[in-house]
Image (cartoon, rainbow, N blue to C red):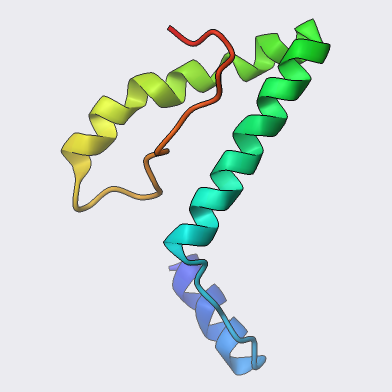
Length: 84
């Protein structure tokens, strides 16, 4: 219910909501993974945290079964940081 109220409040306030295109999302994903790869090489602590992306990789199988009712997006690529 709070999501519905929030959207209605945005509309009442005159907020214009724009959707990001699939091409733009792909570009953001690419940039994010490049950043994660660069920082992982420079900082071992960052890499430990970044390796939690393994969960995203493993969860893709579940997300595919949820289609078409899933929330969010399945990444098209993943960073090259030693994921199994």
